[in-house]
Amino acid sequence: MDPIQAIVSLQSQIAQLQSEIQILRSSPSSRPKPSLPDPEKFNGQSHKFDTWLPSIKAKLRVDNKAIGDSVAHFYYVFLNLESHVQAMVLPQLSQAEESSTWDYNTILNQLARVYDNPNKVQEAEDRLLSLRQGTDSVPLYISKFERVLYEARGQDWPDINKISVFRNGLNSTIRGRLNQQLNLPARYPEFVRIVQQLSGRSTTTTTSSSTPSSALVHSSQSRGPEPMDINSISLNAIDIVPTAPQARSVSPAQREQYRKQGQCVRCGSYDHWVGSCLLQPYKKQTGRRTLPVESDDDEMDSDWEAEMSRLPRREA
Image 1 (cartoon, one colour):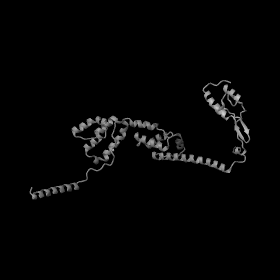
Image 2 (spheres, helix red, strand yellow):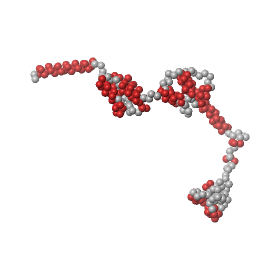
Image 3 (cartoon, helix red, strand yellow):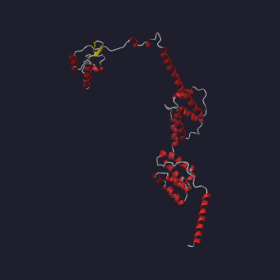
Image 4 (cartoon, one colour):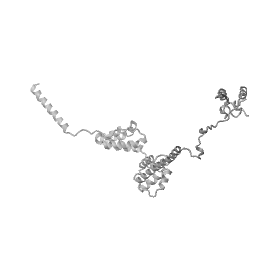
């Protein structure tokens, strides 16, 4: 190729590329980034449809431009279904391809007919009327009540109706405090606020009522015993130590006789054995020390009686 012609050709290509770059720079930016995350694919479980449906609608509404045109919207809904749910809406997909009408609402309407509960509002009303606070705290009860109230479409009910249902579910303690109030709000939000205040007041009252009792005990301990207070006399001060009676001395031959006849080797009773005997072991004095002379025998007899406990007791 002639060098001159080659240079002209390269200049033409450069000019064309510069023109394309200029067009790309002057054109608006490409598709915006999505704002919401992709919802979880619907797996066909009825209890998840109530959360999946508003999630997919919010995604289509907020990220409308990020998803694309109507065809992209249709396939976005279709691809957010598990395979066995997609098989259910294949007729809607075939109709859209044949008519070139890409309306994703045909898919959503089909799913609603299958998975939506037409009685959910009435069922929510029944749950609302039977809702009780029980041992729940007031904030927890309010949270449950508000959720079921919206499920029952009761947010637009008259305030007197909402207050009546809300008050009926409170426990007897809170309702008793409400009955002591002369003036109660007629609007539902203010009524709920009063209930919260009464609940907080009851907690404060319980705490304060327990404080003087502990303070009284502390004060009593700091002052010491009253002169005529018999209960405050210290037994340790006069060395009164209540003890059980002491068993009498039993010879080894007598103990062996008790053992053969199934008697307590300490007192000779047929009603119990040495492990349950109320008498203290016989002790002998050796100078300044007091030694229990039957402790070793008692341990051996306890082991023997553990084996004998499997047999019926003899009658005295």
